[in-house]
Length: 116
Length: 116
DNA sequence: TATGGAGTTGACTAACAACTCAACATGTAT
DNA sequence: ATACATGTTGAGTTGTTAGTCAACTCCATA
Image 1 (cartoon, each protein chain N blue to C red):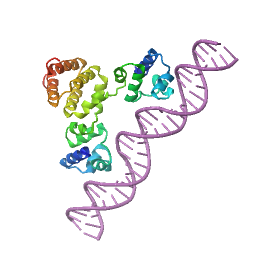
Image 2: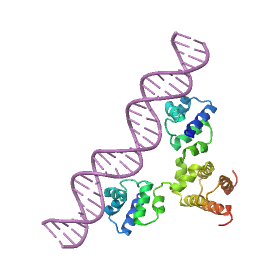
Image 3: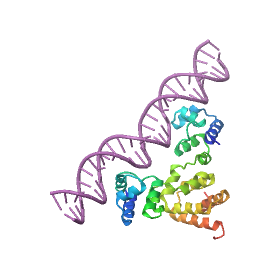
């Protein structure tokens, strides 16, 4: 529980068969930073960096992000720029949506346009 | 456009008939800080300070908070704790929802349960 | 046994956030 | 004219975020 992010990152990185150096190079970070994060010596990186890491590891960023309590800047942008989006989220918060209900909403979202 | 928060704050403060010094004193801030914020010389204060300001001015903090582009803590909580909620928002971001579409989503949200 | 790849650690830093302090300007009432 | 409340500004402070750099250690294999 103390270092769930670091542990998850290490697992994902190993699953992708990358060394700390390789991963770090592809994002443009110092490899020692990766090491410290994996060992919980430093807190998780910024949301944007997490997204970058996931891009390189070819995994979806949601799980790692959820472990950190951080919100990616793109998402923050829509949330803070659209009044209607805020309304939506306030309502969702008020209702206290379950995971299943969120999943239903994702489906509604996809039905909004023809299904791509 | 450039300084909506500062302008709104100034209006609210004047409506409450408080000087910058009075307002600042009641929160425990330096009055010159209020001045700079009102003039857009400094960015809006922290969310907590905004809430304090609103408490003193006897107004609801939502409007001023919304002007700052900061994510209200309620919303931040759901978004950061639920992987599915993040998935939803990432998808919404990817699709670039219009305001009308967000409104549709709010309706879907309400249909999710019987109408409370 | 030495060469190289992988990981760990301590010390340091640049940029930013959220302010304070001191000095000065301006407007108003006396 | 002056006294005082109010507002503005430049410069500096303190803490946090998100890392870097150089110096190690450990391990496999040629």
